[in-house]
Length: 82
Image 1 (cartoon, rainbow, N blue to C red):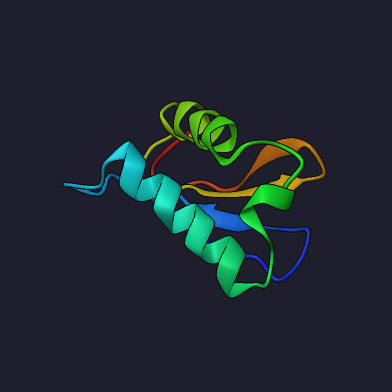
Image 2: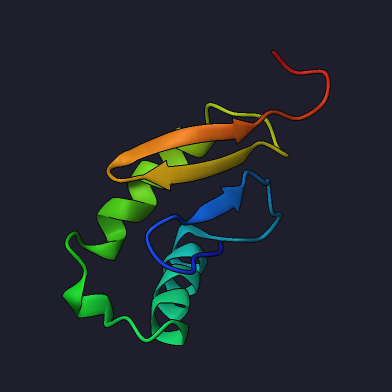
């Protein structure tokens, strides 16, 4: 996960051993690292995680995705897909 403001990006990946709780903590840690208060976000972190897991589960590993306002979008597709 990466974000320098309001345009976060991520690469879809299957990470062996990464649990949902691990993912929640990683997202919270990214908020803290950027100086954002996890309790100050517009939506609960758990809801964001569920949305990201659902969205990413529909895409192959290696897909670059991003957020534009309240929409998740595919930025690039892995070679050989689509």
